Image (cartoon, rainbow, N blue to C red; front, side, top):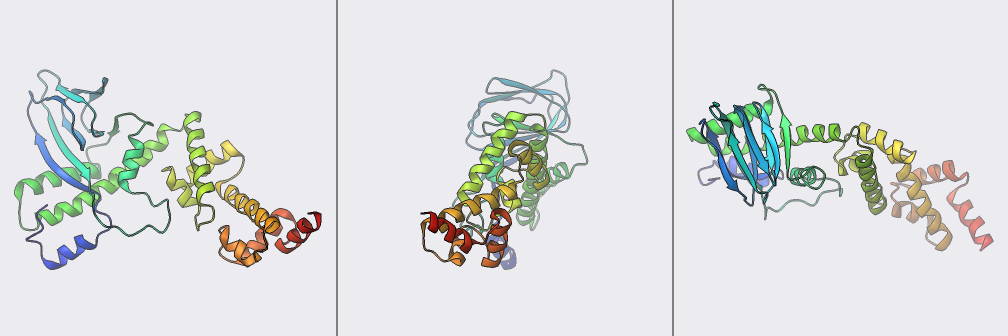
Amino acid sequence: MNTELFPKTWQEFINNSEYLPVVINSIERHVDADWSKTESRHCYYEMIYVKKGISMLEIENIKTMLGPNDIIIIKPQKLHTLKVQEGCKCEFIVLYFSFASGIEQKTPNYPSEISIEDFINFFTGNHTGPFLKLKVNQKNDIITILNRLVSEKAQEQFGSDFLIHLLILELFVLISRALKLEWERSITDDSLKQKELVNLAEEYIRNYYERNIGLSDISGYVFLSPSYFTRIFKRQTGQTPINYLINLRIDRAKELLSESDEKASDIALSVGFSNQQRFNETFKKITGMTPIEYRKIKQRRA
């Protein structure tokens, strides 16, 4: 992206943006009945949108048919070939991209603030294989933005680079939303995958229970909506994610009250409660006694 001609305010916006998701290697539009891709493998992502025509894509020996309004994202370093159906009129928009590196970003407040790159890597990892496929309608916002990107790239008018930057931001937010919905659909009837995700969430809670995390952080870690995640978590464990988190905090607090002379207020903060009053109320609700009463009983028995 050529930023030398940007007005100062535009440049400041880009420099201060925490959300630049990708570096676009190129955007191409192909309208050719004979167009096909020879066997290729590259170090960046490739997204193909099929506007018209039928073709067969083979990725790492996996074949998938592509038709109008299909979008496929191929993961880096995956061998692939695309062949257009003979005599078929076709039109493709092909986007090559890689995620920006070396960009200084602010440290996230919570460990579950996961980037679009993390999500796409997660979604295209062992869970779904070397690629992911989306079916959209012709009026979908993703398609509208892809067409605008191609148009801006071709015209190269004043401000096109800046507008392309903004369109890319919007494009990858929309893609991440679409993938998130697809991800939830893919695990609806897959109990093994649900169990795997709940196990990941439990590990996340155990690792970060002492921090100020909540339901959105935990569900976000496995890229599920809070309501959907709560249902499958309760189905697998018998309790909600928040109850699991609270019980874990209280169990750890019990250990500290029994084994140390730390103040109850310090223990409250160390296990993730924001203040002692909240800690005292929760502790008594679960154990039937206050933290101080619990400590006295344990010390008496020791």
